[in-house]
Amino acid sequence: MFELVLRVPEALVEAVSEALADDLEALSVSVEDADAGTDTEQALFGEPGLPAPRPGWAHSTVTALFDNEELATEAATLLRAQQWATELQIVALGAIAEQDWVRLTQSQFAPVEITPSFWIVPSWHEVPTAARHIIRLDPGLAFGTGTHPTTRMCLRWIAAQSGMQSQRVLDYGCGSGILAIGAALHGATQVDAVDIDDAAVEAAFANAQANGATQVRTGRPELANNEYGIVLANILATPLKLLAPLLAGHVTPGGHLVLAGILERQADELAQAYAPWLALKVADREDGWILMTAQRPAANTVA
Image 1 (cartoon, rainbow, N blue to C red):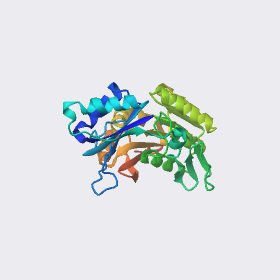
Image 2: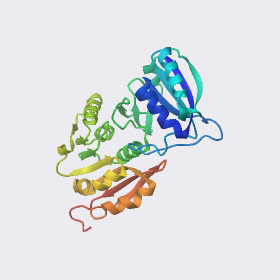
Image 3: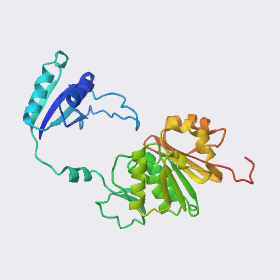
Image 4: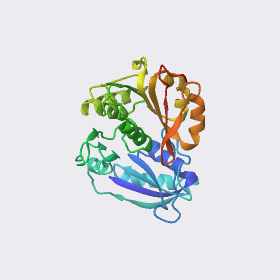
């Protein structure tokens, strides 16, 4: 396998990356900050499911992998021949040592602590000795491995509930099923995990089975029916606003609504969207993200 490493100005990152991936037969293309580790390093963050705010950094390193030397050399030659590529620099072109890519990928995912006794542990790792509640979950196609602040906040909320036993739980937009499994491990009697993405539904089912969470049913949103003692939705602010009447309508009297995927600056607009049904409040914060919760008044209580 051969590697072509380029130094690319921000304005050319998108064009160079697309040319490598679409026209020049690169097996993979990655973009990194060329100034990483220096005083001029820049953070570049985007929201999950949305495009990055910029295609690259002021000085980006673009790395492409090729099957052989001929393809890598041809790609470098053709790129440098373009009139718009005068500022593009070739940093390196050469063979790279064979690696165990599976082992390398696995090494990037360590057990995630939710609470001292509640952990998400990849299948290839040993279980921490302090763990009492354990979700075995490997990174996959569906969102939700426990590494994102929104997932951790939801799981922390679940772990803190003393009345999870005998509850019916709805995990709306379940992704990998991690919240549904967490609820099941903490005593929920029935958990419906639903998603519009068939791959997520399949992943959630497989993960629930692997964790012995027999209380979890998976399916499309039509599976959700009636009311639930706990309704969880870790999506994004815009769909959460659109889903306000539906999600609020699934919460039984005395039940809880738990929403995540919300940035701190979006708290007021979410509270306003749900105000006709429930009074949302911020229950947790982490790295610029918030968890918002509400409890529907009990049937014998005047709102």
